[in-house]
Image 1 (cartoon, rainbow, N blue to C red):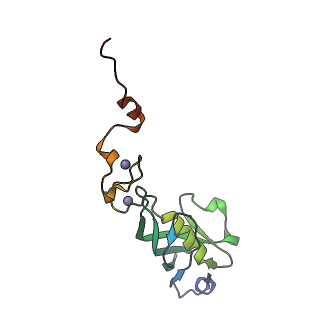
Image 2: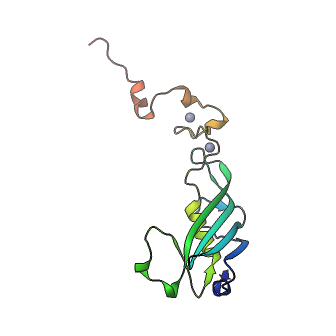
Image 3: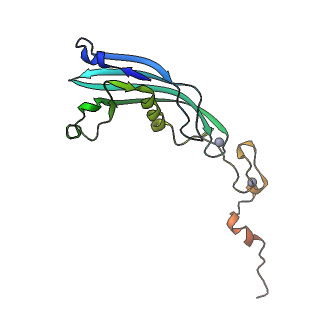
Length: 172
Ligand SMILES: [Zn+2]
Ligand SMILES: [Zn+2]
């Protein structure tokens, strides 16, 4: 979906363009499921002959807990700002490298493509069902949030378990 800002850009009396909406984002990661459309609130302001974009995102997603693999559902909010550049006006030398740029063609902003990129950028890389998640037992695979397992009582490192039964010859 494109948002046409040409009229806004050409209208000298208008300094702020505002639009809210939502985008249906395709799966971008096999582990992450977006639970609903991603809601956005877009604001474009004219600041010293430049166009500055501010966008706020809100979305809900589900993914497996990093430690125990139980399904986790989370809400995420994200704010982003960048300078809007019309592709035909782009001059690499004029732009400072530490500034984010959002490109538009003929002043048409591909809003859902931008939203998609920002979801990928903002999705948390750490997801736990609870901060205190005990994870799963590396030996028997039991979810330790549901109780302890038998291997858990013995703290012997699995790599040394073969030595546990090794009898030293006390006669020597
Ligand atoms: Zn967990
Ligand atoms: Zn176990």
